[in-house]
Image: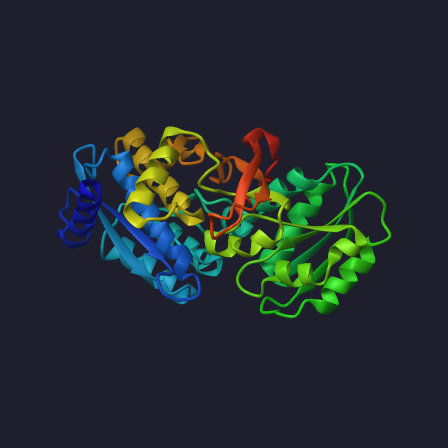
Length: 393
């Protein structure tokens, strides 16, 4: 209980204490309200816990008190732009972290460049953030769509395996399948079909039947790989269509714990995930899991780990640079290794994308858990995945 009280006291002090010129001011821009509220809440919790861990509970870096300034963009690009500009220009923050939605994050990138200030992107995943829309002030601790897709291809692709994909008909789905397809070609597996449906789809009967038709007569192992964000629950809907009668299996990437409840109907399903609290074995994750369970009576989730990683990156960068001068920060962060709940991450010099492990998992049903347990098959290390550099600079 004492640690909970300390954490609450630190959080209150961060929120209430007036800032001074000597403070280390960090802005968190996030979708605190809106469709990605659950993700944003996890990010803030992880960021606060990460700052606590990185500073040994002092909330001080090189003698400077950390002041965290939070701003809600509601997941809207125009609000995200305005919030970041306000943080840099009015609040005089040293660096910023955010945001939750990819569209809002993309809108923020030029603001960082105009103000010549560092923006650590967490947790938005669009490839364009460290790809075609990137600029040198942008660093990302979150994984990108390519890391998601390539890790899944590496996890399930083998010679003799035939795969069909189902994705949402917008950038997230199409970019993800494109990256998956490219990585799959190197595994010896065959891609038989691609299906795209509108993001709000709830009836997958027609698309599911077309996928069945594309796979049912193929020899060997047959898999439908689903890339999806938000509601609709395509995995459950397609499972209800009985793919097993054709010898077809389902696969998808990891997800937040509430979404993993639906995976309990899919014991044995394999895929790759960004984070699952029981998988990484290191002192930071041990601390995060134990403390999160004490404070919130639940394990940390996807975006809690991400917020924690962003905190570790920010503190490591300031300590390494011995400054919050933007050019010194950039010099310190390019190629920088830093510790996270997932182990080591590295900011790639060419595009400032954090290279990191992903995890090949198998669904295991534990009656004591409300969600499907993600049992580790193998850690997919940085060197196991060839993540393309997509920026043009």
